[in-house]
Each structure stands twice: as structure tokens, then as C-alpha cells.
Image (cartoon, rainbow over all chains, first blue to last red; front, side, top):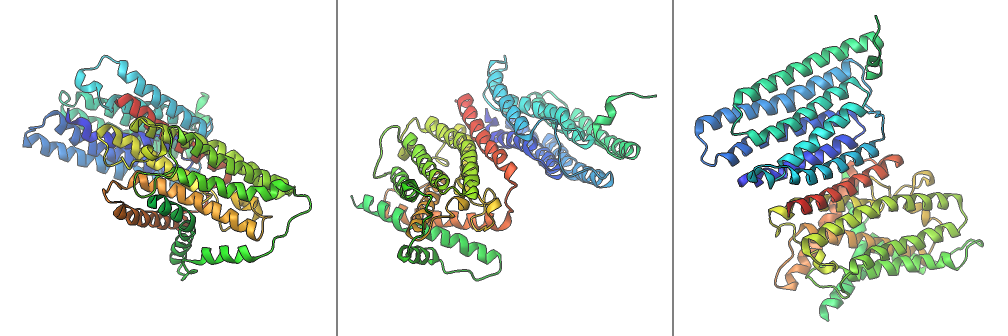
Length: 222
Length: 304
């Protein structure tokens, strides 16, 4: 199995997970998510090459185009939009989580350890069981959930969703030979629209309540 | 025999040069010319000739602190390999002795600080010990990963320079250990971003406030001890990062010395471009270092 070429990138993704959970600055969080997206963009064609060593040229050209689009959107457009939203809505640069940063970092570490142990017991195909795809994916999904649930800003919720999607994307790499490219394009488009819509919602929440923390969104009112 | 001589010579004479290089690098980034590279040696010589003033509240512990601090650092330096894969002292399990020699030196330093009865020194001692609690797991996770990779418990074999010799499974964990060890080096030697060695504000100092009451020859011993400790951590970092497995030790010694000087330049650059962390964030970063090394360990266990 020649998928070991992507292992260093997956380790980098997991390290970025730790950074995401540990950082106290919103901008650092945005850029780390962007970097993670860029790394996934690099992994994607590499994983394809691992599956089809002989790979036909037509596919690889489309593949490279998709990877480039992914890097541009995830590492170029989205962070810009989020930084813009952050500036427009006067979101504070400081992340103020419900649980301490160290606690969430340790939770992430324990989760990653569990993911590594757990993925060995999963009944995977023999070529999938050996490398890091599944644990990295589970760890990233868990990080996404942690960011979603423990950070109170509306903007960090968007970032949590993005990390969650990154994790699911890594899991999708297992099916890389079965999944048509059009699905990936669709997901990317959905994500783009999602971030766009969230940007507008944050703006409105901010105008309505003068602060965009999700605390205000917990009670329904007529 | 001759290699032991070179080892002793390097440990005794080389460490202050690292401080000189760091200061010179920082001066370069600050647009100044800076002090001569050999300035730490002049400082040590000046301090050794001076008299010493001691508070009347101090006891023998206060005078004992610098001596223990220097000797423990020196003995720790005898356990590690420098150029070739050999050390003057080596036995199975000496990694524990290495870790706790450093801890013993710190313990006596803290005792000496508490012995002065000064409020500032007590504060510094509390901080030093608190941060040591967070640094120790990081160090042991690093050593654990290396022990698992090499299957040995001797410092000499642990730091075999195996990062680039390693196959696919050990490469990633060793890289994580390297990152963790770099953070550990900064924290253990009280460099920016954990502590500022040049600050003169008692409220923000950690290590420097502990040695505030020592003067003359005792301060010289402390400074030499701190320099040796920095040298120990820098050498182990070099052993991790640079492949030194030359057949001829006369090649590996110069390569090793050059690499340690490069680490000093790197430290100077880090200190020039970074501000120090807020005090509450220090345990946080040290936890991150421990988590990184622990992740390396879990990775190693799962991959094998």
C-alpha cells in the first residue's frame, strides 16, 4: 500500500487539531483551519495516486483542478470571508470557551488516543487498517465537535463545522476510488454557500443583539 | 580515554559560548553590534574574583544551592553522547538518573531561594516548581518514545540520531519528539517565550529571581550551571535532528559543535521574533508539548 506518502500530512492535520483546541486567538484559529484545508487539498491527489498507481491522465488533470479549487476555496476565500466577518461584526479576537483551553486540549488528546486505539478494532479492509486515515478522521471530527460545543462565538461555530467537514472528508478518502469527483465538487460548493450564509447570519445576529455569542440563540421568543 | 577528555573539555568550556552566540544573534536582530561572543567567559572570570555578600537569614543551604546546581548539570552532561555515540558514564536505565539529576539541581536551587526569606524569591520558586511539574511529563513522554523506538534505556542509545535513519513508522513520532523537545529546551532553560533571561522586573521573572541574592563566585557557579544545562538540552536536540553517525569521531565532533552553535543561533532568532507568553499560558504550552510527545508515543505503538 503506497498510502504512506500521506501519513506525514495526516500527522500534520492531527497536530493542527491540537493547535485548534489550544489556541486562544480567533485569527489563529481561522488560519489554522485554512491550513488544514490546504493540507487536505494536497492529500487528495496523493491519495488518488495511492489507489491507482497507473492512474489515467484525464482523471488526474480533473483531480488536480479539483484539488486546486479546494485549496483556493478552503485556504484562500473562506478565511478571508471569516476575517472580514470578524472585523465587520466586531467579534472579539479572544476565544472564551466554556471549558478551559488546557482541558479541551487534553480532551482532544485523549480523543485522538482513543481514535488510534479504536481504529485498530474496526473491521476495515486490510489495505485500510494499517495507516492513519481513520484515526486522523475520527480525531478531526472530534475536534470539530469540541470546537462547536465549547466555544461561544457564532464565528467559532462556523469554524467547528469546517473542521467537522475536514474530518468527514478524510474519512471519505477511504472511498476515494468509488466516489465520483462530482460529489466532492458538490460538497465543496455546499460548504462555500454554508460559510457564506453563516457570514450573513453572524452579521444579523450582531446587529440584533450587539454581540454575536451563541448564548443569545438558546431561547426562543416570539 | 581521549574521547572522555574531549567530552569533559566540551562540557566544561563550551557552554558559555552558546550564551554569547545567543546574545550576539539578538543584538543583530536589534540592529546593534552586541557584546563580544566571549563576553560570558569574561563575566564568569569577573564574578569569580569578586567577594560575596550573604544575608544573615541564610543558612548553609543557600551556599549549597549553586554547588549542587552546577554539579548535577555537569553529571547530567556526562551521561549524554556528544559527538560520537559514547559517553563517559553510561549504564542501563541512566535516563532516570539524567532526568532526576536535573530535578535535584532545580530542587536545591529552589531551596536556596526559599532560604533567603525574600518574598520575591519565594514567588519565583513557586513559579519554577509549578512549571517544572508541567515540563516533567513532556520530558518523560519524549524519553518514552525514544526508548520505544530504540528498545534501550541508555541515554547514549536513546539519542542515536535516528530521525533520518528511521523508517516510515518511526519518522513521524520522532519528528513530534523533536518539536516537543525544542519547547522543553526553551522552558527548562527559561528562554523566551517562557521566561525572559534579561528581564529585571521581579514580578515577571521566574528563573532570574531565584538567583537574585547570590553574588560573586556563587553567581558564577549558577551561571555556569545554567549554561551547561542549556548545552545539555541543545546537544540532545542536535543528536535528535542531525545524523552524526560518521565512522571517524574527528569528523563528528566538529559537525556536532557547529550544529550546537546553529541551535544557539536558532534560539537567538526565536528570542528576537517572539514576545514572552503571559504567565498563565506557560502551563498551557507545556501541556501542548507533553500532548505532542504523547501523541507520538501512541502513534508509535499503533503503527508498530
